[in-house]
Each structure stands twice: as C-alpha cells, then as structure tokens.
Image 1 (cartoon, rainbow, N blue to C red):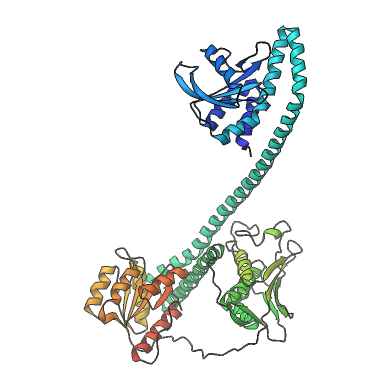
Image 2: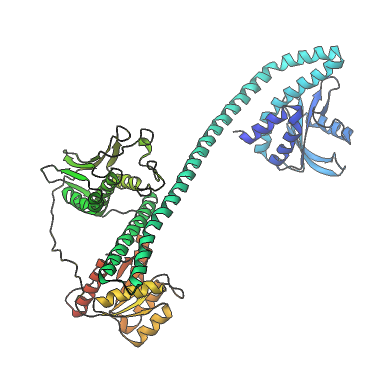
Length: 570
C-alpha cells in the first residue's frame, strides 16, 4: 500500500511551482541527499530537467549517456558526478514505465519497497511532464504542437487510469483526515473535561479544609469550652470522612479502569443492601428535608454479588438524587423482581437531565452545568463508577428523564440469584468504645502530627504508647523494651516499612507482637506486600478508628490466649 505521505509528495510534483519543494520532501522520504526529476523531450529524444527546476546541469553529457543505459531497466544505480560540485556520488534511478520521466536520487541505495512505490506513482508525473513539454514546444513550433497533441491523446488512457488511482488515494486520505479530526475533537473534549475535573477536585478538597482548619484553631484556644471542643472534634471527623470518601471514589475509578476491582461475591439479600444504602445516604436526605418513599417486593430476593459494592451502588444513586433535588423534594425507591432479574428503581422530582446530556450521563467527569458556587458538589465520577460496578455484577444501569426540572429515574438491573441458599448468621459484637486491657504500643510515622494524634487516641483508651519517626528509632526502641502492638508507616525516610517489619520479626522479643501497617497505599498488591513482610493487619490512612479499636481488642484477647488475630486486610 502506498503511504499517504508519498501520495502528498507526488501531488506537489504535479505542478511546476511546487515541484522543487516536492523533490526536497522526496529526498527526505527516501533518505537521499538530493532528488532530481527529468522528462523526455519528444523532439530531441533526450531527458531534460522538468519545468519549474533549473534547466542547466553540469556534466550533462555524462548524465545523458547514463539515462540511455537506464532506459533498458526500471531501477539502476551507479556512480555519477554531482550536479553541484562534480564529485562522484552514488545515485539511484527510477525510470517511468512508458519512458516519459526519470527520477534520480543522490547518495542512497533505494530499498526495494521504496523503489516499487516510486515506480507505481511515477507514471502520474511522466504523463504530466509529457503534456508540459508538448505544450512548451507548441508555443514556438506548430508541428511540435501537433505531435504533442497526438502524444497527449495516446497517453490519455494511461492518464485516466493514473487519475483514478490518484482519486482513490485522495479518498483514502480524506477518510484518514476525517478520522484524525474526530480523534482531535475527542481529545479536546477530554482535555476540557479534565480541566473542569481538576477545578472541581480543588474546590471539593478545599471545602473541608476550611472547617478543619477553623476547628483545629478553636481547639487550641484556651477559652474554648468543652462543648466547643466536642463540636470542633465532630466537625473534623465529618470533614475527614468526606475527604476520605472523595479519595475512595477516585481510587475506585482508577481500579475499575485498570481492571483491578475484585468482587467478593456471595448470596446477598437485596433488602438488606437497600437498608444499608438508605442508612449511608440518610444524612443528606435529612439535611435537605426530602421525603423518601420506599416500596419493596413482598418476597425475599437475592443476588450473587459483593455486598459492600452493592451498597455503594445504591447509596451513590440515592445521594445523587438527593443532591440534584431541591429541598423538601420527593425521592422514591422501588424494588421489584422477576424470575430472571432484580430491578431497583430510584426516582426523584429534581432538576432532571437535559436531553443532550442524557446519552453522556455515565461518562467519566460528566455532570450537569452548575453555578460557580457548585452547590451540588461532587466530581462527576459517581455515576460512571456506579455503572462500572453494576456491569461487574453482570447487570445494567439506565437513566430516564423527561427533561429539565421534570425529575429523573435510574434503573438498576441485576441477575437474580436462583441457587439454593445456605445462609449462616454470625454473632455480631458491637465495636468496643474502649479496648479492654492495657497494651504496650509503639507508633512509628515520619509525620509527627500523625504519630502524636494516633498515640493520643490510643492513650485515651488506656494503653501505653511510645512514638518514633524513623526506622532507626524503631530498632532502638524494640531493642530496649517489648511491645504488644507496633503500628508502622510504610513510607519512612531511612527504610521502608516492609523492610522494617522483616527486621522486627527477626527480633525474638517481637515474634508474637502484632504488626500493623498504616499507609496511604491501599491497593490489593500493597496488602500482599504487607502480608509477605510479616504484618498482621493492613490499615489505610486515614485510619478507621473502629477498625483500629477492633485490632487493639483482638490484640488484648490474643495476649490473654482467648482469641487469635483476624487475617490481614480486615
């Protein structure tokens, strides 16, 4: 197949005014030093430089003799004097099939594929040069003009064939340009969405930082009352939870797009999932004083899925409905089931979805236009994430709206679980507010504030806690005393937490200690690295305090011999 770049070059060779530029481009394409084009003069029966090029050439006699030899073959190479300085230089020659033109490339031995491409396209130029030469002769010689006309007629068939081939090349080029234009359009749209997303992300992260900073300043004031300190603590907790939720959504999107989400499937009661999802979304529904109407099918229905992800799916759609419905609005949730599938419909009487936006509602970073205060919040990733999670469950998600200010409805369809169920109910214990028994704990984190606040929390539970900020300090402290629990950051300045854990496991006094990895890295491969390094538990920053209290409670029970630690990655 002839490259579009070469077709473009031969288009420039067609016209005298662009012929020199075309030869320069051809030399670059063929990796030659220079390129020359000659057309055969019908009267003189010799090859002369094409129109638009210099008409005089040093050592012309040598070149004319060489061209006569070249007419016996299609591609000949040899040593010839350079037209510029007369020094011998290797040249390659391509002769047009009808003998109307010759292409000379200096300083290169043509590859067979390139020679074949040039041989295929050269007739387009040969015919044009013949017509030009004939027309030029006609200007001064009427007889030559008649001969040129005769030649033009004889070449007409070949020219038509070449024109059709060129037309096909043009059509192919036009299609390629259309594809490129569409790709450029998509890239511009993606870039625009990326810029909007970064602006929204900055806004969403700055929002909780303001109350966190103010609450922290309030706690430091000596005049603050106990009630004000408690309120400030609640504010910090809420805002940190909000930021963690944003980061979790971003990480989930990353995992889904890279195929890293692994579902822990089991037979799940859909009504239980809906109850948990309502609980998760209750705060925003109550804040905006919405009326939530729930209608559930009378029978118990199950799906084969990951309960945590299913709760996330329904909660995200409920939260989305609450955000885009004005205060005191109405939200409906309906559960129906057929023999084959489970249907969950979530509707609202909110702002609705514009018809132009509706086909793109599940694309990443897509959301309805908002005012500068971004009162609805969000990053435009929630629905894209929900759709991906639903499809991982082999289900589907669709949206419907009659238009702006006419509400919307989202329908989640999941395959119904039909196999016989054997469901065991495990005893669930409430998380302790304070772990029983005092533990000796070591916290190692190069972030001084993170280490000190975590230590203060565990000390408030009655445990003895020491802190350090490097692997060196950890080794010194473990050499001088025993610890029941060691909480280690992974990204330490002098040694990573994985290597530190291996060294600590080599200390006899620490063989039975509980090692907890506390890190910002929460991917499955990070948990596997922690397990291989000897950690018992992997917690992602910011630490879930209920999980941390459970770890301490289990450590106390383990020390007393009444229970064993849970597996890594709880």
